[in-house]
Structure formats: C-alpha cells, structure tokens
Amino acid sequence: MERKGRCSQEEDGDSCGSSAAGSPEMDRNPSPPPEEDETEAGEEVDAIGETVYSKHWLFSALTRLIQMVTDQESGPSDSSVELTDDLEEDLCKVWDMAMDKDVAVFLQEFKAPDILLGVISKSRSPRLTEICVGILGNMACFHDTCASLSQNSDLCSVLLLLLGDNDPPTLLETCRLLITCLSQPDVAPLWLERIRQQPAVCSSLCFIMSSSTNVDLLVKVGELVDKLFDEDEEMMKNWVSTPAGESEPNKDTQQDVVSSLLEAATQLRPESPEALEVYLHSLQLLTTVEEGMQALVSDAARGRGVWMFACKMVCEDLCQADDPPLILQEQKALLAPALALLSALHSSLNTDISTELLGSLIRILQFDAEWRQGRTAANSESEESRKEEDEQLKALVETTAEFLSTVLMKLNKDLLSSIIKEGCLTERSCVSAVGSLIPQHITAVQHLIGLLSEVEPKLAEMIKKDFSISSNVSS
Image (tube, rainbow, N blue to C red; front, side, top):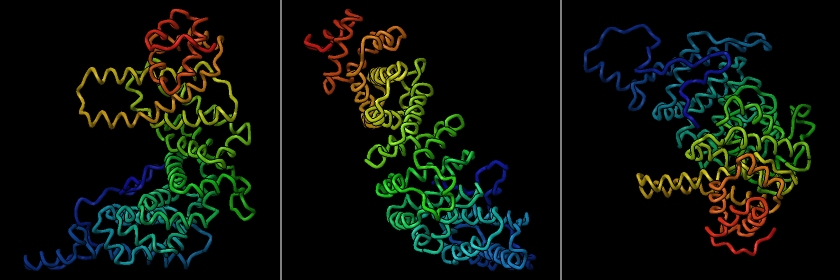
C-alpha cells in the first residue's frame, strides 16, 4: 500500500495538512529557559526514538481526542459532530508522524490502537473516523506494528464492518489498511480467515464497485478484491457461487461479483485506464476455476458484456496501428489479462471474432518481433536487463499466440480478405505472426497458408519458403 502521510484529495478537496518538518509545537505555556545541558537532556527524553517528534505533544493530542469523543457522547445520539480546526490539524500531524517507524512503534506501546478503536466505535464524525483509520494504516506499514494490530480481533472486526460505511474517504483508508495487512505474508492468513467469516465483506465491496463514482475509491477497492482473489482461491469460488443472503445489508441493491467488477471497470475506463489492470486480472482469475467460468458465462448478456468491454480495451485503447513497438512494454500489464480473458471466453461463448480484434492480435506479435529486433540491433542493454524484459513480455506473447492460433483455425476466406483489405495483415505483419506461431501452432499456420494460397498466392509461397513449411497444407 502506498504509505499515505496525509489523506488523498477527495471530491471535497480536503487534505490532512502538511507533514511536520521538525518537532511540532508543544501544547503548553513555555517554561523558563533551563541550562543548556538540561535543555538537551530534556529534549532527548521527550523525543520519540531517533526522531525530533515530542512525546508530550503526542500525549496532548491523543488526550484531546479522547476528551472530544467523551464530550460527543453527552450530545444528541443522532447528530454528526464536526472536528475543530485545531484538533483536526493536530490529528493530521499524528497521521503524518505515523509514517515514521519510531513513532508507529511508540503509538503501539502507548496503546494508541485501543484508543483509536474506541474513537472509531463511538465516532459520529466521518472525518474523525477517516483520520483514525489513516493513522492505523500508516502504522500497519511496518511489520511489527502490523503484526500487533492484526492480533487485535476487536479492531479487525470493526475495520471489516467499516467496509459497509457510506463515507468514501473512510472506505478508501479502510481498503488501504486491509491491503497493507494482506501484503504481510505472516499476518495475511489471519485477515483472510476473518474475511471468510464475514459474508458482508463481499456484499459491501460489490455495492461499492457497482454504485460508486469515486475514482480513487474504485481503484483501491479493485486492488483489494484482486489481492483477495489472488491470495485465496476458495474465497473467490465462494464469492461467485453464493447468492446474497436475506441478512445482507445491501441485498436489495447488490449485484453479483462479475457484474460489479464490470461496472467499476466501465466507470474507470475513461477516468483512469491504467487502474484497470487489477479489474482485468480479477476477471481473468475467475476464468481459472470452474465456478468462475460459470459465473462469467451462465448469463449470456453478462458474459457478452465482459467480452465487449475487453474487446474495446484491446481494439480501441491499446496497441494501436500508429503506436511504436515499445508500447508493448507500457501496456503489457493490461494486455496480458485482457487477452487471457478474451481467449477463455471465446471458447465458451462461441463469439465471432471481429477484424479489429484479429488485427490487434497480429499487431501485438508484429510489435513484439520489431521491438526485439530493434533491441538486438541497438545492443545497448545488459544481458540481465534483456532477460528480465523478455520474461515480462513472455506471458503476453504466449497468450496472444495461443489465442491467435485458435482464431486462425476458424478463419475463412471472407474474413481473411477483409483483414488484408483493411491493412491488418500485410507481408510484414504476416511474417512476424507466423514467426511467433511456429513450431507450437504449426497446424494453425498451415490452415492460414491454405487460405492465403487462394486469396494471396504470392504471400503464401513466400511464407512457405521463408519458414520451410510443407506444401501439404489444409484449406
């Protein structure tokens, strides 16, 4: 999780203030100046660890926080409470300070998580709840404090319940905290077990994805869902195969997981296309299990909706004809799950392949071949660097080649003539595609050559000669 020292700019433009550059101003009247050695000794005792932050100031801020919640309880129970500007500013400083490991450890030793839990449980101020969760989120960035927080079952239960909150900034900070904890291998199992025991988590996340227009929140919820699916296959299976129960808080408006993922991805596409990686990956993960495929294709309209979304991403947003080959390096994280998703859906939905999609598959293989040729000619990168980049592109190229081979086996002369006429298949791109397909997909190449022999005989002969392919081809 990105370690936020202050809250993100939300729709209302609110922020948590600036980070403290030095020791924050102490909330007391100044004492008479002591002797120099006494001053240094006093500052050393008051400093938190190796930082210049003041223990006294931090105690004062937390004490005022407790007092504010105590005073709040004496007021009307159904009214919201606004933070004073001074207290909000000081709490935001604590939020920033919690980015420091020494401060995070000190807060843990001072039982700050228990204090913050009590505040969250009693808070009637959305802003106060957001800040408290944000402080805990920054504390969780460090292994020891994350492990300690994760052992607090009451705190964990309250945080999971907050996913049903209606305040976007609070939801955003809650998701950040959960992602941070799930990223710690030794505490992730604790959180996964608790989430499995809370069916409302799935309902709450689906409700957010299907109804929110807050881009930052949708991005973070997508990261959380993707992390959960990646870490716990059984949870993913359960989520896509279990309908909402009568006790679910959002059962009337809840959509299924697939539709919720699609709705959020559709919302993000024009606003933050780079954030779609986690949504495409989550949908692609569903294709790896029987329950997930069933959820994707059991409803024809839903399955075709996912298919059309991924097609538009590949054909309209990514790897365009006027892009340089290097674009694959920038877009591989989006292209790989999108094409894996399309490949899986194609065999189940029996969908027709458009000339645009076929052209995109050929172009990806062409760009990969040209990029590799250019890199070899330049010979300016280390062997280790080239090997790492090859590995990163390997999944994309293999997925593209496998999908293209499947499509080519069903190719007919009319579609082949169309892609040649539209410039999607040229001599150059055909050579690149065939070079990527052989020898693993020789049957698909032979079928292509058979059709080319009728539509573009010269190109067919050139391919057979260049790649030493037998003339015994299928037509």
